[in-house]
Image 1 (cartoon, rainbow, N blue to C red):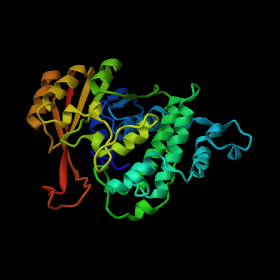
Image 2: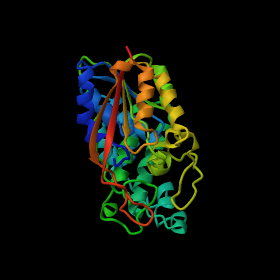
Image 3: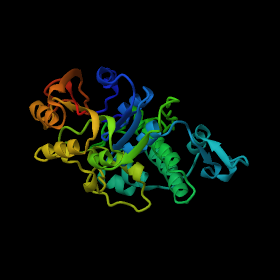
Image 4: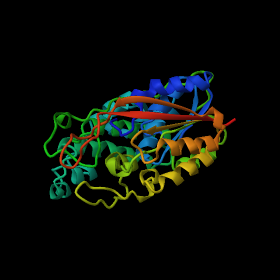
Length: 364
């Protein structure tokens, strides 16, 4: 999934840094997990990882990539009766194939509000998805919703399906990578049919303990987990609030059993509870202090962009105060900037390359 701040390309650099202070895998907490790329990489290396994030869409990806160790099985009742072939249970891949064949010409929430085929979509000129893909997204998400209303559904299995749909929708979204706006003409990717591709959970080593996923504030996760070997902190660094930039993946994660009130040209959903103090320059210093007070880790690794609200000296000072001052280290790595749009009258990027700053301190 295209995601601001995604660390996939920086994973080797991060793992090299972790290996400098602890070669043997232990227990890690990643409370700003995002797409869970770092959490999954740590799990693959043998770490027991507790991942978390404020976003419901992130939680689905965490469950799919970090908490689960293998694909679960599903009740065949998720498919129409004619497609069950007398089976009571089916595998994940077989279910995706069946869900792809669901057919219903009626409008659902996505096709009504986020395609040009729906009355609300036409009123605001919204073109997030083609009408065909909007209806397909509705059919799959509605099927998941009906199943999860029952008492016997598996939360992890449901989240895997939601994560699969989020990634499928993102591949055909008529955007430049974020959902703060849509493209005014249909791009080639948006005209391709929705495809539910399987997500492979990260394998857990035999000697490693089970990993977990969490949705909520970083400090709350850190407090609930308690002492760990590594606390990896990768908070938002500028004013872009993720609930606004990813409101449609969030809508797919939350569902619309109770339809939310949407607003504006882009169809934003209520998001005040998910807005982060890290994205408010005057509140970021307090957010840093709060999370460091809650972090009970032998090692703390703080990842931050060089264009963030907090300057390098402020972060270094806070980490030296939190841990053993003489153990503080600083590492940096340049990488290609993520661009969701080109330079223009409303935006001009200062440079193509930015630097990821890694601040480290040992606490015990």
